[in-house]
Structures are given as C-alpha cells and as structure tokens.
Length: 79
Image (cartoon, rainbow, N blue to C red; front, side, top):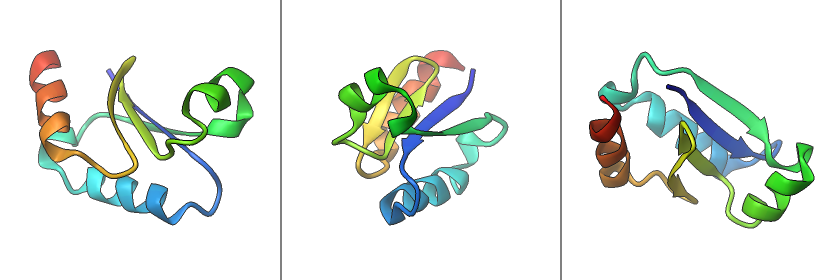
C-alpha cells in the first residue's frame, strides 16, 4: 500500500499537507507518490479543483487539508 498525493507545482497547501503527513508516526513506512494532477486529463477532471488530494491505495483520505481522523481510520482499516 502507498499514498498518492495529487498536487500542482508551487502549491503551498500541497506542501503543507505533505509535511503534515510526514509527521504522522502511523504513516511512516508507506511511500508517497506525489503526482501532478494536470498530467492526466481524467485526473484533472476528477480532482483538479480539490488539490491537494490524498489517497491511500485507491481510497480517498482527504482533500484540501490533512484530515488526521480520516487518515487514522483509513490506516486502521488496512493495517
């Protein structure tokens, strides 16, 4: 399992979410793929107005800001 973070270049909110995620001990050890939401038209249509968007596997964790409660729920379901 791995995280996917959809972002755009120079997105301060995206950088903040990534930093906050790195500080969550339960998330340690899971790789994070940081992907440009605009690189794929389907992804841009789905998530373009919601970035940053954090997925764990294919499951939406949160968008905009890190939702720590939702993160813990998703990790508990898969660990």
